[in-house]
Image (tube, rainbow, N blue to C red; front, top):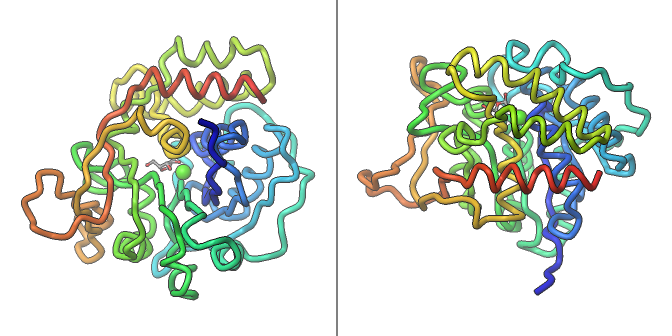
Length: 315
Ligand code: BDR
Ligand code: CA
């Protein structure tokens, strides 16, 4: 049965893996309608994430996509970045032309608020792929929009995999734990893609060669991004490839059947210096605290890569 595409706002800090998520969404108009993409400071500062977002849209052949700049720093803390993973531009690897398409004048947070007020209640899904600063800002500035969000499907956190930026915390949550706390306490239905699942979608040689084998510019660039991005985690974990974290969010919207998880309580640590940004996930249901998230733990990894490759082939 054909269904109307789901309206989404992508909130992002590209990042090679963010780039895959954006390409997957732009290649899937029958599944998702991208109302706009908001950049946030994260992997690299905002000046780079907004520029990278536009470069990715142009690579996809979608220069009419509306791209906004959002917050340039976390709510209360100094920005922590991840050039050690993504390179100094955030999108190191292949060299792409500077973007020509414009950055929208409106602030990204205002765009999120205005869109949620304009569109019918419960018809817009937010897809955060970076620190949750913009979403928390929107919820603080306009509490009336919180109840209008259909769902938030985000990449962030970890339970069994614990942390990547510290021993206890995953990068997106660690960078702005106060923002994450606002989002996790908001009451909006949450779907969480933690490291537990993203560490299962690895860019093995065969999968990267499948991107390259598309024979297109997008296929070549995707393969070169994967080549660059994977070295960090392969050295660190001794794995067969790098984890393609962020496109799990968009893949979930297209093929939720590829994923398995549990409805559980997840709280964010904002006090302890030692475990700052930890997602305390009650996977075993021992706390008695109210369920606030669908926390994903497993994925059909090959099904995920088949979907991604098939969609990239369209661009
Ligand atoms: C997350 O942090 C960023 O480096 C990636 O883009 C992803 O969103 C993984 O911890
Ligand atoms: Ca990201």
